[in-house]
Amino acid sequence: MNFFPTIQRSVKAGVIDLAWGQPDPSLLPVDEMRRAGEIALDEFGWEMLDYGAEAGAGPLLDFLRARIERTEGRTLAPDQIITTAGISDALDQICTFRTQPGDTVLIEAPTYHLAVKILRDHLLDIVPIPTDEEGLRVNDLQAILAELKHAGKHPKFLYTIPTFHNPTGVSLSEGRRRGLIKVAAQENLLLVEDDVYRELAYDEPAPPSLWSLAPDGVVLRMGSFAKSFAPGVRLGFLTGSKEFLSRMTGGGLRDSGGGVNHFTAMLLGAACRAGLYDSQIEKLRAAYRERRDVLAETVRAELPLAEFIKPGGGFFIWLYFPDNVDTQVLRAYAPEHGVDFVHGARFFVEGGGTNALRLAFSLYPPHELQEATKRLRRALDAAR
Ligand SMILES: Cc1ncc(COP(=O)(O)O)c(C=O)c1O
Image 1: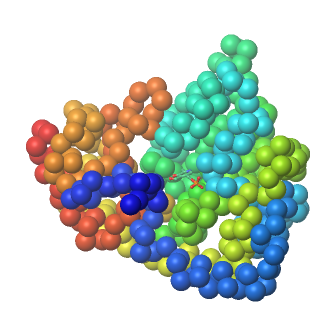
Image 2: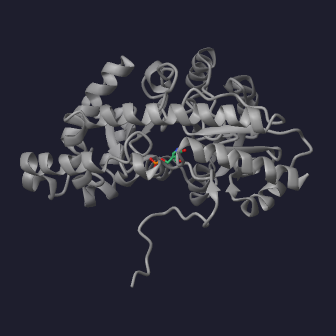
Image 3: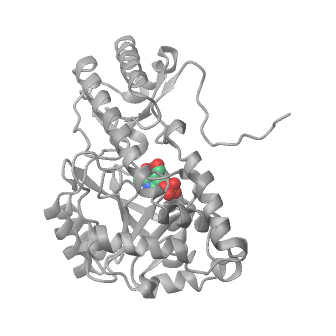
């Protein structure tokens, strides 16, 4: 008798649930990991099962450092990168090392709602900065920083998702990237860059990360294997100044427990070295590109009231309806029509998004995305 679930996701029977920003199980690299397990245990043996080095498993860090230098054109000293247990863990740890309860931090409006939950765990005062179709509004950021300064507050960091944003899918324009870095450097504002969707670029390479463009110490960039390989490996990485990273590697968590998820990190390192990471990314890009295209086309045909920007990457399409459509009300009608989504207000901390909603195209194959959109149209008809 099984009492405990194995995976996080649960979906109601008969519902196509486009709320989940999670990969399709059929795309997860099961065979690749079986191969990697054999390769890794043959090559590394007991070293996989010992406590790992504080900064992370060597084979994985060597791979990442070389890959980042190649793809992002910025040289990385060995003490400017560490592994993490994914972005959720990295953000939580950054809060631990950087903030005290009551400190102010900045976010985008809208933003990834579960990152907000992590910030709330640390009892932080969260101030939203508006965004538009080019991403974060840097002028508004400057104005809000000035107001905060006037009130005697200096934010501990800005959490931002500049590339294939969740939920909007928008990437910050190149001009604004440079503007943001300039403001951050001038105002001594740490940028915490969530780069989770970088590898899932469908039309052209992803724009340069803030980290790759900024002077040392301005950006902590959080990467993850969750979307580009498999969320269950619970591994990611952090690039930034050696001063900050050495505080993390010297902290109690890693001093006591060693590098995070060491066994899996050694296995993943072997998979990466064998070319299995690059091939997985190619497979995911092709599959998700098709899904994005199908969902965008079907939304255009079935939901002509909805406005959206077709995203260049990531997992989501963000729809705006006319102001008189309340997507939270629409959600109440969705399950009985066999569909679900996340209503827009969930991604705002101070109101907004009531006429918006987020659809994830990652979990379901194209024909189910088409069916879900038709069901959404029926739910919308019923709600109106
Ligand atoms: C913007 C964003 N950041 C972070 C995460 C979670 O990353 P991880 O699984 O590495 O903790 C997600 C997952 O949906 C996400 O959309």
